[in-house]
Every structure is written in C-alpha cells, then in structure tokens.
Image 1: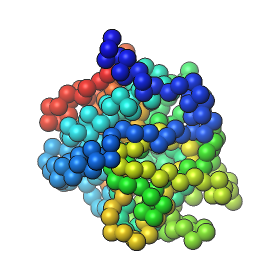
Image 2: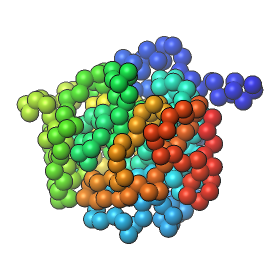
Image 3: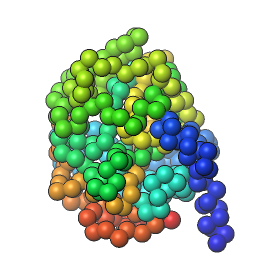
Image 4: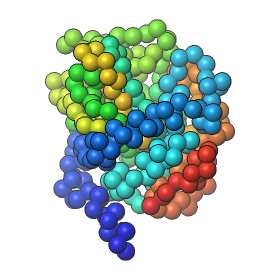
Length: 315
C-alpha cells in the first residue's frame, strides 16, 4: 500500500488532464535530478557503444539509418528501468489507462550544425515504412497515435535544437500516412521559413500533406527548453518539430523518446521486419514491454527481460 501511494503522486490531477487534452502535451516535468542524469549518461553512453546484443545488430543495418537508434531498452538495463519509472508511467496511465505497453524507444541526437526536424504528425507510423506500425482497435478509432515521453538526457535549448510544439493541433491530421515518402540520404533543408533550416532524416515530410498548399502556423509554436533529466509527454499526432543546432556550442543535444500505447493496440501487425530510413531489420529480437497493469491480449510479441537478462520492472 505504501508503495502504491508513492507511485500515485505522479498521476495527473484533473486540471492537468484537461490541460493535456486541450494542448496535446504535458510538461516539462522532472524524472531525474540534473546531476543524476548527467552522471547516468556519462556512465551509460560508454556501455551503449557495445551493440553485440542489441536487438538490431550493426551487420543488419544498411546505409545511414536511424533504426540504429531504436529500442536500446531491449539491451540496456538503465533504459529498461527508465521506461518503467513511475514518474513517467503514472502520468501516461492517467491518459491511456492502467494496462500499458512501451512499444518503441528512440535516441534523438543533434550535433552542432545539424538542421532542425521538420513539422510532422504520426498516427499509425506508416509515414516512412509504408506499413502501419501501430493499429488501435475498432472500438477506439477516435484515438490514434502514441503517447511519447521525450526525456532530455542533456540540456535542450533553443540554440542546440530543442523540441517545438504547436498546441492544440493533435486532434486533426494534416498528413496522409497512406502516401509513402521517398527516401534520399542526401536530402536536407526540406523547408526553410523565418531562417529556420529543417529536414526529416532523408525524407521530405511535405510529401504526405493532405493539402499541398497548407503550412503549419509557426507563429503559434512553443519551444520546449529542458534541463537534463526533465521530460515532456505528448501525443504523436501533435504538430511537433525541433530547432536546428546552431553550432554555437559543440555539445550534443540528446533526447530519448519512449512511446506508449494501451495493450489493446496491435504493434507491427503482420510484419516481421522494419524497413525505413534506407535500412531493413528483422523483428526477431523485438518485444513490446508491459510497463503497467495486465495484458489480456495475444496479438503482440512481448519481452519480459532485456536481451542481457535484466527483468523489466513493470508497476
């Protein structure tokens, strides 16, 4: 009972849930103390260089592909514990309910001189692969997308490429994910407005626009400045982007995104591989992780421990 009370303090209050429903995001909020996060990253970045038991091995990856940044929680004990932290999970269950999966994680590094990430939304995550990667059940079709919790592993500022959101844009998709973007590893600077260089990892996200003449209202954008150890929770259907790293400092900006859905959602339905960003990898070593509640479904491949044997500490 005492442990449950400790965890309960991180659930969203009714007014916070209303704020989230209106804006499409909540935070930033603290997951670690800044010094705790700095120390953890100094330690873990060296350990993560060992990809010998990563879910997606280097020998499988072809070209310059972002897939190499996927799902390191499947071999890292620190990241396995991170996705299950009550500071995160309690807030997500406040929105998605008690039975919760983490279905993907991604690192988002940004180095000095890197362009910003273009404005985008994601519902089924078919935008790069051409195949839906998550499907909500028919009875919940009014929902879609995933709840992403983006944690700043380093400081995130407007100068080094912090996230940007356009509040309230999560209820209507401006992009058609059934269209397939065309990958070109040399494609950069997809758009520039008000002097901001943006791209999308070798894709032009504008190819998916429902209205080719539509443009996001960047005048409404809000920058998400965060200290190390802070996180922000948002719908993937919220219009979001990032600023470029101006290069005024050589320090890398690093974010770690954990993506959550209810257990009723199908993950990688009918797929045994991921093909995007110029690479293709097998899902043989993949598994969604139950981070809270119970899973009464059998439609997803599941993982109960990392590939090194560390058990996921589900709440």
